[in-house]
Image: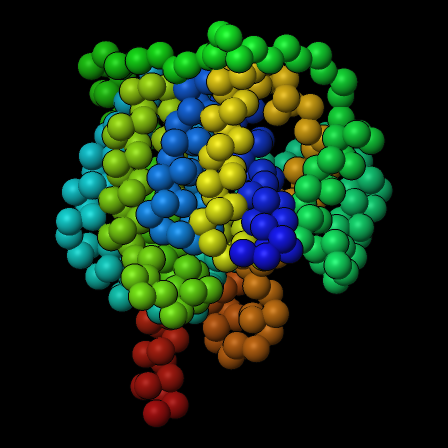
Length: 370
C-alpha cells in the first residue's frame, strides 16, 4: 500500500470510538467489568477478524447487554455467561440457513429503515447532551467535515482525537511497565449466572444481533465490497462472532459482535482493508497489557465532544439520508414508521412493523391500483 493508504487505515482504526468508548467506560466504571479482560477480548477478536475478512468488519460491544450492564441490571458474571450462551447459539446458527432465510423475507426498504433507526438509537442512547458543549461540538464537527474535503482526510480522525484530547481532555498521570504486563484472568461463571442471563439479557440481545450484527452488516458489507470473491455473509459473521464470544468470554471479555454502524464508520473514513481493524485490536492489547487498570483513566480522558463528533459522522453514513430523498413516498412512510417504533419499542419491534407496513402497502397497490 502507498503511504497515503497506510495513513488512512491507521486513522480509520479509531473511527468507531464514538460507540466503543461510552459503552466500555460505562461497563468498567458502573458495572465493575475488568478493563484488562475487556480490552484483551476486543484486541484478540479484532486481530482474528482482520485476518479472516481482510475488510474493515468492526468489533463492537453487544448493545443490549452493554446497556443492561451500565444500568446495573446485570453484573460482570452475568455478562460473561451471556457471552458464552450467545457464542454457542451463534455457532449453531452459522450451520443453518436461518439468518439467510430471514434476510430474504426482509424487503430492501425495511433494511434501510433499520439503518436509520439504528443510527438515531445510537445517538440518543449513548450521548448525554448535558455533558457536552454544543458550540465546541459544532466547531469540532465543522473542522472535521472540512478535513474530509481536504488533503487531511486520511488523518482526520487522528487529528480530531489528538486535538480534542490536548485542548479539552483531562490531564492524567500514567505509568507503563514492560516488566510486569497485565494479563486477563480466567473467570467461569456459576450456574446461577447462566440462569440470570437466560432470564434477562440473552433473548433481547439475540434479536438485536440477528438484525444488526448479522443481516444488516452483511448487506452493507456486500454493498461496499460487491466484487469480493468470498463475500461477507450472515453465516460467516455468525461463526466468527460466535467463536469469539465462546472462547473469549471466560477471560473477562464482554459480549461482542460485528456491527453495521461500525462498518459505516470505518468505511466513511476511507478504510478498505482489514488493517484498520488490526490496528484497533493491537491498540487494545497494548493498552491493556501496559497500563492495566489505568486504561479506565485513558478512556475517561477522551472528551465527550470528540466522541459525539465521531458518532454523528458515523450515524450520518449509516442512515444515508440522501438515499431516503430518492425513494418513493410509500418507502419514506415505512422508514418514518420504523424510526418512531425503533426509538420507543426497540429495533426488533421496528423490524416487525416495517415488514408489516411493506406487506400492507404492497397488497394495497396490487388490490386497488393494479
